[in-house]
Amino acid sequence: MKRYPSIVDQLLGCLAAAVLVLGPTNAVYADPAALSPNASAGTAFTLKTVGLRVDTARPTKPHNGRIRVRGVLDPTQFDDSVFDTLDLGFVVGVTGVGLATTETMEFDYPRCIELSAAHIKCIGTLGEVANFRRQRRAPHAYGVDIVAPRRSFAAPLSKVPVRVVLSTNGVDRRADLATCKIYLKRIAACRP
Image 1: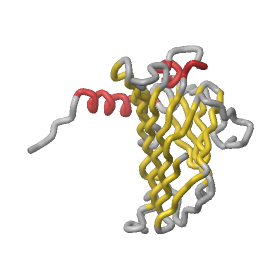
Image 2: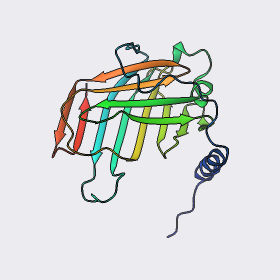
Image 3: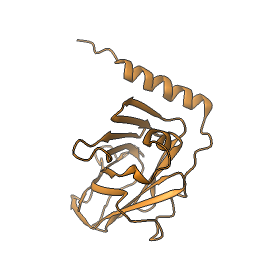
C-alpha cells in the first residue's frame, strides 16, 4: 500500500525548498565553537540523553554518523515567544565523547513551523530535525528532541564527558553529561 505524504510533510518540504532557494539569512546566534565554560550552565537547558552512533557497515560513505540529543528547555528567559525565538535561528554544538571536532547543527531563519500551540518543528541546514514539545507536567518547559543524521565523525568514540551548547539570540546555554557508556567503540550512550 502506497503511503501518501501528509500535509505537514508537504509543508515542511515546501519550506525546505524555499529556504534552499533563499539561502541562509541573518540568523542571530553565538559562536557554536565556543564550547567553553563561559557558556551559562544554568537550568534553562537540561540534557536527558545524548546518543552518538557510527555505522561501520558502510565504511566507504563519509557521512555515516548520527547524533540524537534529548533534553528540556525552560524558555522563561526568552524575550519573545518560544516560536519567535527559535524561528530567528539557533545552533546546537556537541563536543566530547572522542569527537575530533565540534559537531555543529545550524537551524537558520526561517526553518521552524509551529505545528500546534504545543509543538514546534525545525529543519536544520544539513537535514537535522528538532522537535520542541510543551511538557504536560511543566507547561512552561519544552521537551527537546534533535536528530542529526549523515554526520562525518568516525569511530572510535570514548568515555570523555559530552557537552552540548544551545545558542539562541546570541546566548549560549550549556549542558554536560559526565556518564557515557561506549559499545563496540562506535556507539555512545550518555545519561545523567
